[in-house]
Every structure is written in structure tokens, then in C-alpha cells.
Amino acid sequence: MLSDFAKVERLRVLVVPWKLSNNKFANSGFISKNAPMNFCILPAGAWGTAMAIHLNRLGHTVTLIPRTAEEALEMSTERENKAFFPGHKLDPSLQIGMEYKPALMEADVLILACPSRFLKSVCNELKESLDPSNATRLNLIVALCKGLDPTTRRLPITLIEEELPGFPCGILSGPTFASQVATSQPTAMVFASRSKDKALKDFQEASSGSNLRIYTSSDVEGVSLGGCLKNVYAIASGICDGLGFTDNTKAALLTRSLAEMVRIGKTLGGEMETFFGLSGFGDLVLTCNGQESRNRTFGELFAKGESIQSLIEDKGMTVEGYWTCKSFHDICLKKGIEAPILDQIYRVLYEDQNIPDALVALMGRDLKQEAF
Image (cartoon, rainbow, N blue to C red; front, side):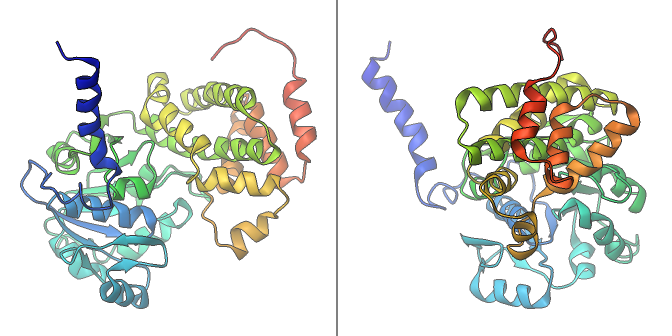
């Protein structure tokens, strides 16, 4: 039997590598068990770049395509995405592309990492390059988006199925910050698809490694909705931080936000169990508490007096929850779904309701039995 000291020493040996510098653990030979695959990832935002670093580290061929030729040239020269993901060096073997067509000619998997409101336009740009005569090897499209299309209110997976038919597709979601995936911190995600194609299992195995474990699910709606809704509630969590509220308030907010997520999600076709998993509760906890959460940070700065225009337009913050909140508010009204927290967030963001009044409205609701 191990002594207490021996147990602590064993734990230290296991944990210490994750605290080392960027690539000391990452480059220590932990390679995917599967045959190498060819991935095309676009655009080169923080999340797209992090996934490119992760997949390249596993031994796969990866082509990362930035938004502009200027960005591509800078990244190729500097071997770093200084504009959107500074501080994370790109391995020389990670390819930086400038055009869709040549990259998709060789790709097995296409990963779309754009904000949800731009997904439709990206799909339209890709159609010519995804012609079967060009994308001869492509057998899977994966979305990393967490939001609704602002015009049609379609989920990312639904939009891809309709705009780019003929390819199996899925949604990859869960509690992840890009920087922590890039630096090899142990992480878990869930990959959901309606398809039963072998390409899904191949992707799960090829993308998993010693620091990223991917589960699968057939509940596309539940996984997608959890990833969308948590961003809205993260704004409320940031508002709590900005007002100086602490543990009691945050615990109550997260618990009742989860209940609301379940209520909305089930009505819109998701399975209840999914919302207690990685893409629901897991992502809610991370996004509402993490210092790297853009939606939480947006809420905090807004509560401290910064304007929405300043944060989104002037500072260029990507705040999926701001856009998603309006879409879900309209959906809940149309379908008669009770969502008091989301409703008050909407009123604060879009109708200039002051935050103290929103708090009074929530705390003053009729008393009832706790239920999901």
C-alpha cells in the first residue's frame, strides 16, 4: 500500500507536465493512435487556431486558412497568430493556406470555426470549392459554432446540412477555452451528429489524445442548444461579477439557468440528459466562471458602465450571447416557453432596462416549488 507521501508524489508526477511551458508536454510524443488525417480549418480565429495546434500536435496534416491574404502572410512569416491568438507558436509543419480550393482538394475533414452569424456566408463562399470534382476526399464537416443564425434562427448544424448537402456533418462542443486546448490542458468535449457514417468514429479517434477526450452523441439539438444558451447566461454571470455579487448569487444563477436551459432545450427537441453533460452543464459552469470567457467578461464590463457599442463595435469583442439572446427571446415568446432569466437579460441588453429593476423582477416572482 502506498504511503501518503508516495501518493502525493505520484500525483505530482502526473500533474506537473500540464503546468510546464507551452510545448514541453505537448511535444513529448503523445500522437493519435489513428492513421494521420488531413484537416482544413477556417477561419483562423482563436478557436480555429487552437484546434489546428492540437491536431497538428497529434501528427495530422493541418491547413489553417485565415480570413485575408495579409493575415496568412503574417502568420506564415511569424509562425504565430498575433491578431487573434497571440503567444501560441505555430509548428513549422502546420500549413497556412490562402485559398479554399487547394486545401479542400486534399482534406478529409473540414472544420468551421467562425462565429455563428457569419456561418451562412462562409458556407456560400465554400460551395464552389466543395464540388465533388474538387473535394474528392472530404467525408466530414465539423462545426465549432455556438450560436444561432440571426436571420433564420437555425442551429449551425441545421444550416450546414441545408447549405452544404451531401456531406456527413456534426457539432463539436463542450467546456473549452482555446488557450487551454492549445497548451495541452486535460479537456473533454462531445461530438454530435445525426449520421452513422464511419467518418464520425474516425474523427472521434483521430481528434482524441492524451489531453483531449471526445465523447459522441446523437442528440444534435441538445448539444447545439446547450452551446448556444450558455453564452446568454454567461452574460448574466458577468453582470453579477460587475455588481460585486459573489458565491450565493452565482450559485443561484447557475442552478436556475440550468433549469431554464433544460426547459427551452426540451421544447426545441433536445434530450434532458444532454443538458447535464459537457455541452450543457459543463459549458455553463466554465463560461459563467472562467476569466477567459468573452461573454462573462462582456457582462462584467457592461455592469461596470461600458456601453454595448463600445464593447462590440469599438473593441471588437466576439459576444455570441448578445446576438443569441435576441433569437432565443423571440423563440420563447413565439412558443410560450417560460424563461424569466433570459427575458430579463434581453430587456437589459435590448430595451434599456436597468439592472436593479431586472433583479427585482426576478427575485419578486411568485413563489413556487423547485422544478426543472
